[in-house]
Image 1: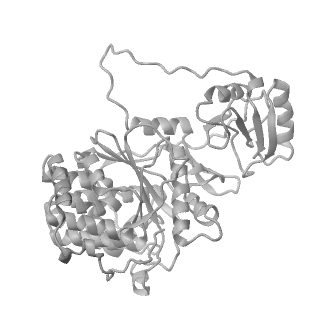
Image 2: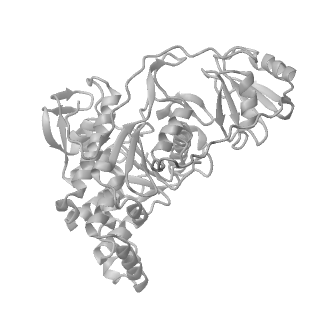
Image 3: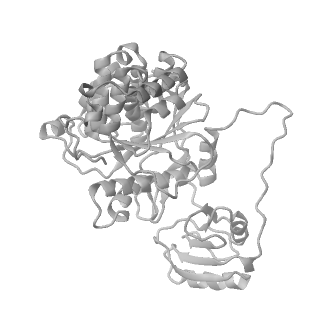
Length: 513
């Protein structure tokens, strides 16, 4: 979702940004000079700007000529007119390391589109609380590579405060429920973005530093301004839902056909997975296009990119374009990797809806940690070992029991079993949802030893770091797999294992579906 209030292109610039009001101050010129000296050369600086992807690359182009009056002016215009939202939550967004993590979100909003534009987009009016495109851009501290990791919309995940659901429901929960009845549209948008970030942070084990969101009309405008992107289709495609109608082979897409290309899932062999590959392919093509001299040295196109981005993209409050450029200045297209979050395969939830089962939390956290992994140590270098958490006596571990299994009275009987083991039980009740498939032991950061003790009494239960329990206490959430204290949980039914997606880079031009 984006806030379209006050986005008119005719809005006058404030006096401090109007080029007729005078040249940059001495302080501003000194700042620009420092930035220019910090870069290794204009071409290298330009390469760094393109690695943040389809949404932010267009915005980041304002820093290409940061040391000149024109670059300074474009940067000031972008900062003054860019729509910002309070997307980064104060809590529930924790992670280690110095990497930069940017969440790119595609919204299905059509707010502000005219009837003619809706017709061109092959769609109808929609307020847009669905976030069917979610990509995490991860840039290690050394800026040597960049990883774009896509999250399928049907990924079955735990949404903080709402239990298990599809990932694309997180924004809607925040927008409609967390914000409150009296919230403004801007407050609802911020609330939706914050809950989505909390969900992604929990999945990945990473702190999300920045947020960028574009709606359908915004994507349409950006693709028009850049002059189109070359893609390569293995076969001809035609689909009435998205409006796509394209031949096979390499071709340049912009406007409505570019939008149809990244939206289509009906009629594709793997539906949403092929749509994800298309989105990644378009981002890669955009990166290559923006690195071409005919784009980066075209002052008129730079201005149009900045103006289109200011009208189309919503970013968090603290995103600084020059800082982003400095962090990514050495990334090359063949070092920009596109992947999909590790998953197991297709399944159905308790409501018989299609869902995609992701790998468990440990596997996901290890996957994202590897994106920033240090180089392999030299042979013979001692490798530090991680100490296992020390068990704690049951009598020192208070537990609150919540029933999410759907079986009436299970919390009370489980509380009695825990008390028999010596655990103080601080309370019982129903979980936030009756649809928990797996049993969870939730603990505060630092209480790994407490969680390990209780997990030993319920083999197979998963342990989850959570803000809900206070330090020194645990929350036990009973799922449908729970068989009693001292009994192993029921193993999940096997599901079809799907081969993970082969990583692509921004330099790849092979044909796709």
